[in-house]
Length: 201
Image 1 (cartoon, rainbow, N blue to C red):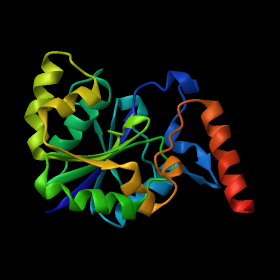
Image 2: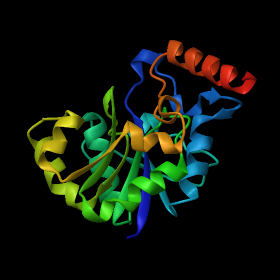
Image 3: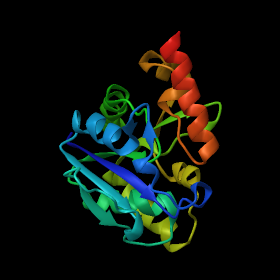
Image 4: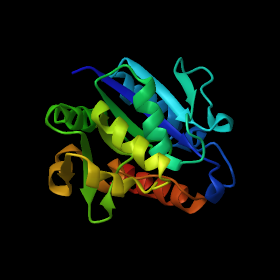
C-alpha cells in the first residue's frame, strides 16, 4: 500500500487571531517544519490543504492545494486531500499539532489495509485529524459534503473504522503530547510549559 500525507491548514484561525498556526514556534522550531520532517520519513507525497489565504509553504518544498469545496471545515480538507494525493492511503494531520510522531503514523497506516480509516480515540473522543484515510472514504465524504453534514466524527458511521485506543497509543509516548494541538494562545503557553517540565525532569 502506497502512502501519502496531508497537512490541513484549516480556516481562519479565529481563536488565534487569524495567525498561521503552522508557523508557531514550539520548543525552538515551527510546527510546520516539525510536521514535514516527521511525515517525510514515511511518505514521499506530502501536501498542504486549506483555504488559499492559509496555504503557506515557502521553503518547504511541499505542494499546496486549495480546498475543492470551500467552507466545509476539516471534512472538506480530507476530501481534497484524498482527491489530490497519490497514495492508496493518506495520513491526515491538523496544522496545529506540533508533536505528531512518524512512528505512530506509520503504525496507523499499517492497519489501513483492512479498514477505510484508522483513527485514534481517547477519553477526549476521536482524533480524526491525526488519522489515516483510504480512497474508500471519498464517496461517503462527497455525499456528506453535498448534504452539508460536516461533523467529522459522524463520518465514521459510514466507514469501516479501525479504532486505536489510548492503551495502544501509549506505546508511542505520552498520548496527551502526541495528540496535542494549539487552538488558542493559552494552548500554546500550556504546551510550552509542559515541554519545559519534561525537559527539566
